[in-house]
Figure 1 (cartoon, chains in turn orange, cyan):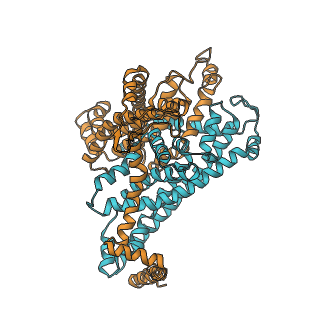
Figure 2 (cartoon, chains in turn orange, red):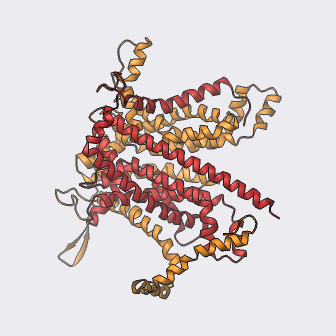
Figure 3 (cartoon, each protein chain N blue to C red):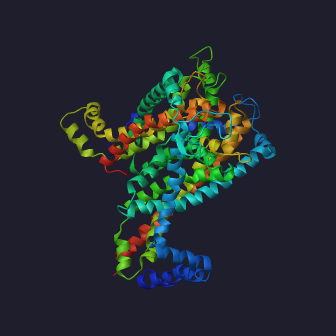
Length: 338
Length: 273
């Protein structure tokens, strides 16, 4: 093969010769009848093989993402039955003449009447909102320090923030059980330094859930904040200090307002998944920690009420669609992806 | 922004990273604990790792998880690559809004909803649940992550290189293989790794979509964790954390080398007469 530097054209065409087997493969496949038939079908319908390749992810998502939702919606309007599958049919042939549609609104009525579900929705929002606020308060100083760190450290610091995100969520939550339980490391430590005399009940409380969410979602807060703070124009702060502005006031008047897009992005990235969280409230929270993800799980796996859990899912989705839409809009306005 | 790194910044970094890493480090340390009691240190031992090798249920679950992760991340990378290309290159095709909505929605969708909806669909078409259904579920959410990673790489990609190749007579398909694919390769690799770890990690969606004989490792860990903390689970966790850490380090070293080589190529190309 030619030396790429001395003769780029020869290099490319040399590489191209080895890549030429793609069309060679097509020629060889044309010997097989099914491929030939398929190819003929495609050219007759006017669909190129390119279009076909493109169709695959589209069809996949239609089949395994959109269609399942419609099914959830459908089942949420049906009645629970002790049968296989455990729900009634929405459409039924009556006397073989006309199709009857039976919409059963009972599941939704139950969700509205039984205050257990209301409480679970409200408590999910409350827990997610408080945790998001704590995550912001914890994450901001970290992102700020990362953005101010010497340039040669930044990539390493960034990697260090991302790395926990790659390790198992379940394991990270599990690690806190050993720390927070009654005879756990936290109580051991606090008693050793003499701060408390009796071990505190930390596990199976809302506090443990807050800690779990803050810990698990901290990278989601730090990354957008860091991306925002890192781009900030330093000369603004210099100008402020030249004009006699104290650093703390300059932070309050300049840095903080300019970082609002990062704050908004981080808060949404923490809040939205936290509302529907299941693992954290289940493992760290107590039996009285109500969260809607946990309720859905219990309805489905423990009570086997598929229609009701579908209705819970539909309402959870409706609850989340507002923040998701706002987030999309904000991201698009900032020229981000979306 | 690099005006004076204050003591406050230093303290926030130390505390922040301490908070992020201490729990995992403690977990790793106590996996080498002699005592069955997780919080009492009774000397160094690797006996819990030995016990793992005799736990057939756990080994089976690990094997299932690994196969699901491998197949799903590979298929998801291919589908996600095509989806990413569609989003960034195909302009306004019919149904684009729906498509990009379907790509972004699974990223923010609560797992309980994704899991429940997939399960109900598999039941509705009376498809037997097991290895295949878990893999399909994992492909579905992983491909969206890959698509986003690939798309963001393609957005920052200088299209004039492609145009130059085509001006020199390179057909579009070959241009894609020779120019575009190598350039977005780091995104493809990190997309695959991301899919792999997401699949390795998933508890909720797998619990909904699995069937008999296809218990994954997170499901196994979850059912034991509910009964309490055991050093055996600490040992499994340590191994998983170790695999991920090694994988991430290798990936970042490869990415760095690739970056350096590309920078060198570009310098040489600029210097060429």
